[in-house]
Image (cartoon, rainbow, N blue to C red):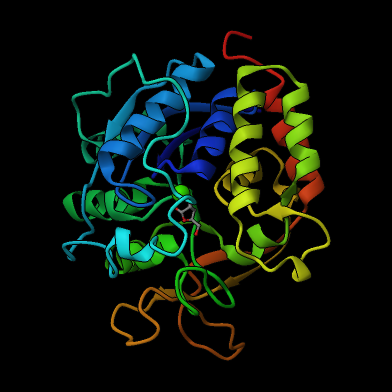
Length: 322
Ligand code: RIB
Ligand code: CA
């Protein structure tokens, strides 16, 4: 069975791996990619997305979206200050050839509205692996979209902890108002793939070698991107059994191909902190059994690295013409 998806992302090394997985795996039909301000400023996210698709020879339309968060002028801490202690982790341009294919003239928000209001697309899953600005803008411009998006899978938040602050994960923190808008919109099904799940299934240097051994454009690119992530990972070595790094975004795609990649999950009322002095952008997962707040999301808690690497290897062995 093939799942049709639209991928909204902020490419980004792990988004790049998600794009290749979605474009190449026969279990996914990648209809469109939209880009958003996040890991890098919007023009870089769009160019990087085009580079990835050109690199693997995939013919998928790319739509540029929001250059700024929904209500804030910028990230809560500007990107250059935020990245000052680890400037090499998130480089502006991915190390791939400049794109030759242009982005579409239509905006990402228009594309999302057009796609999801079309009854012929009832089966299409929306996957978001960046800040939720484009999705929130589309829901605000066309509130009927909330009942038209039948299923959404997103990378963001954490059940416990954070990565950009002690309590917040990057995608939700970049645009907390957008994230809150999405979680309160009344979508029928939201699956959250948070840090807890992605950190439980890190990839290793052996995976880099396995990707390289495929001798495909996707395999080589994935190996280089993963090596970079492992080299730059800031988790103390004492907390790892071997050098490794979480590769967050493609876990959302892997979940649509092999749901058993998620090994435990719970259903909870979920919202987002938009005002906290120390908790801005925290995903609030209400695990109280007696809560009366309505359940609005499934939250993945753990994942299988073995299933994850199997799905990635299946995809990266292929090229876009096969
Ligand atoms: O916190 C990890 C997430 O933030 C990933 O989606 C990464 O690409 C960045 O957007
Ligand atoms: Ca991302």
